[in-house]
Amino acid sequence: MAKKREEGDMGLLLDGVIEAMPLFAKELVAGGVAGGFAKTVVAPLERVKILFQTRRAEYQSIGLLGSFKKIEKTEGVLGFYRGNGASVARIVPYAALHYMAYEQYRRWIIDTFPDVWRGPILDLVAGSFAGGTAVLFTYPLDLVRTKLAYQVVDSSKLSVQALANNEHLYKGILHCFSKTYKEAGIRGLYRGVAPSLYGIFPYAGLKFYFYEEMKRHVPEEHKKKILVKLVCGSVAGLLGQTFTYPLDVVRRQMQVQRFLPSNGVEVKGTMETLVKIAQTQGWKQLFSGLSINYLKVVPSVAIGFTVYDVMKSSLRVPSRDEAVVEVQKRSEALPDLSKVSRD
Image 1: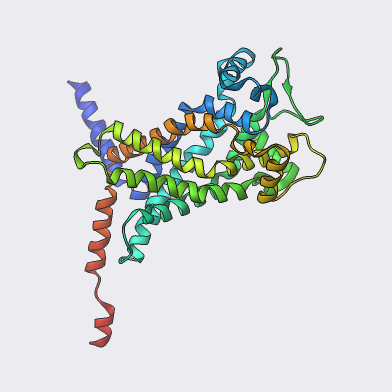
Image 2 (image 1 turned 60 degrees about the vertical axis):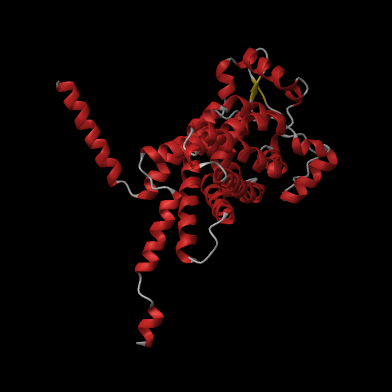
């Protein structure tokens, strides 16, 4: 009896906390949980994809299954999650900001421009700006994740191979941050941010656009089904990633540029790097790891959108349609200042 009373008290306390949370905080929590969960599920595929993108020849030559076997043999199961701590540390605030900013930008556009069409273009614009906002705040964590994932252990498990002479190992997230900052300052922590921004604007916008557009064509009675959300999220991620993948490859190579064999000339610009990759490595390198990315994006985006929607429901976040109605009510309640001035 006492146990049930305690559970009831805890439930009431939780309800009180949820009700007291401001809307943006609920969206931050929902987005952070969704991002962290989805990223951890696909971490092994992300590790192999980065090794492909950054020209780890010993992995590119043996393919996807061979890479999985090699990592398992040389590094064990934990090898699949090398760099995942930095990845989750980045994706939780990134996803939280991304989803929250998307909702906030969407409401702001509706509130500021009440006569603007409420179609999928609204999701495209809000998603694009939300993606750019999230990248700017969290990019250094993505850089650290890539550097940690790039380190591989040789077959003897006794050392980590480094392509640059006298390269010290990154021992963890904080050490990588510190070493990168000491070597190149703030600019070093944002190396490769330009292609990230070029890529995230269309990708984030298209992802939300396709997801919301697909859901609009789903019958009302099926919209809340998990499978429907998973399918819509999968297709949205697949289409959005296809259009922007070459910029992702450019970003990865810029992030680990100082480890790569080169002629000593440092390529600095996004387009310069893009052209150089096409000329020296072939245009196919711009799509290296894309098949793995498809395998990763399908569950990642699908799980992300689905968990986000489920979390919003649990946290009692109003639906987007309810938010639009609320904005319209506020707009109608405001006095017409033009009439007031005439009076």
